[in-house]
Length: 396
Image (cartoon, rainbow, N blue to C red; front, side, top):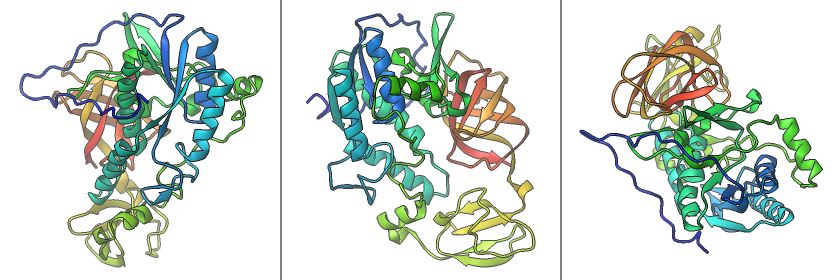
């Protein structure tokens, strides 16, 4: 199969005098073009593929295989529920059969280990990782684009709730019609220009971005797709029980050590079994009883301490982010925007500017709560993505 043996692309890392590739105009998709569709086994990607077939595209379906039956991923059984399980693969294959399109299971097991390693590294370093964003950036569009080249596909499509707008002849990532399901946040890296690689948005198709979730399910039912009532995945696929610390402990128990929980004045409140058991903003399960609610406001992996404070201690006024992706040409001036820190989190009015070729600064116009190093910050102009990056420092 063409899926075996492909290696991820390698891109220049930037440096003195390096300029990101330009944003270029693209030709619109045309009937008969070959499209590689990422079939996850869910209702969204299934309907995306069905719509492309109806529109006359030459559709090829693929499923990202993370291992073989009976194997485990990061210590969790592969057949467990998630977005890439054995059951999902079977659902994707059945949908491809109903649509009468070719179907391939792509072996991404080795590349997926990169996602898990990133997740581990960030947590052990006291940061808050987002593996779903990285998976979209590195695998679902990074690796899939290489596979698309191998089969002569002009386009790569998925069932993400997002749209592609064309302004001044340029493709821009736009929020979905169904704002409750909007996924532009997790696609910011795939849609922008960075100093690390060219943008991928110019050859992406997002067929369901103009539909509500109810319309997607109704379309699937009308086509007799068995996944029409399948629930959405709500978990990180390799952490099916949401027990992040348990996953980390299974893979590297030696990284855990007893430490101390402190108050903001340095008062020793209690002990803990490893800073990895805590996340910024956490309120429950702290193992400390106090007269007023306390929250995790800081973690120090070097001293293995966790600091608790009151709610206002979580207020952030600015952040800097690395690996910035810009979705339109930009200068060094401050640009008004709204900033978002989580996939479905609250947005806050802000200003953003490029502080270097690979970094951005974001200033919030009002305090933004529970902003943590390691998260992604995505900035919007109206419903268009302006830029995004990975938070490296938070000002509180």
